[in-house]
Image 1 (cartoon, rainbow over the protein chains, first blue to last red):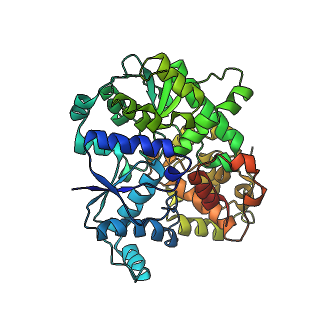
Image 2: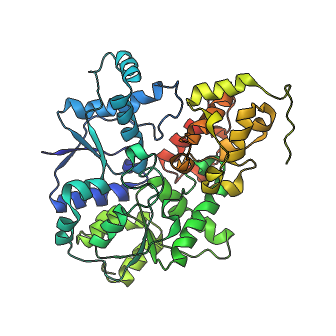
Image 3: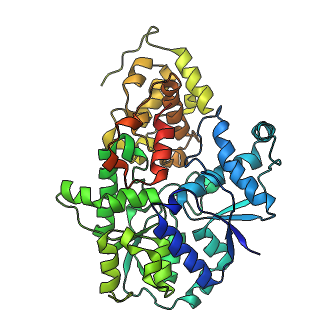
Length: 293
Length: 135
């Protein structure tokens, strides 16, 4: 059966390199998927106010789109979409009173009981596809690439929707090992990059992002793998500002985990749109002979 | 920074409002400081989360209003997953933001953002930032 795929807004514009590399990889792995023909923005963040249910409507509507197609699982790539959809799903599954209010409010839609399973590509590969099977598909193992896995917040917190143990995750470690890379463990792999504070407190977000990259480099990483377009903005795109501001800042290539997957599967590098990363990202892969220069 | 407490300083309405919006009983906080030790923004806030909890227990409106903590909080949920009392501190921070935002007081003004500042910014940054910091 084809799996329903929910892209989210950012993957269609600023994070095309996350989407194109992921979808080409799914094809190469023989995983059948179909993008939901109608979807809306999930709202990016889950509402944390007990008396605010209106912000649940957007993610629940997306889940209803999955349910009405008779599919039981929805696949996400963006960490923030994963978190928002998974938490809204959890609320609909467990809170009878709020479920009734939301279903009554959305009276033009079929009722929703939280029956869809929301997955992220990382736990889908771990639980449904299997790391052993993934290893068999690798055409260009990333041997000798010292890479730091960065999880960020929304894949791991809160516990109800965590892909792995919030304080000591291994899923991305194992994923990168399956690609043949040398995983560099570092203390900041689950520390927040500052997220949306790039708008409210941009200097604070820059500093925490810089400290994460500095920690990864200090532990011996040559590059960092991540899953979230906002983390990529804070730690990838904003590296130019870090290099200007901090004396000890060093360039560190940052990749979406799917770009590394695509390279390891032997998919043409153009598909991964490395030009949307910082220049250092393509350079390192060429220097390591993973892609042609 | 010493805190002066008097019955005049204590605002029970604010305490109850934050409890109602967050659904969290911060009276249970026993001041261990795990939240502060876990906060990635600790270097950038003027009142640590542990102290926010104490100020809430006292209903100290003035000190709470002077704290930039809820506005620098990135909702990373680290304090929440580690709190030994099971308090969702992230929800408490959201409630403190909403107490202001629901009076139609924005913390950031989208109009004032520079075009080159937002040109490359992913949508999720703006959607989440506006959700958290505008009314």
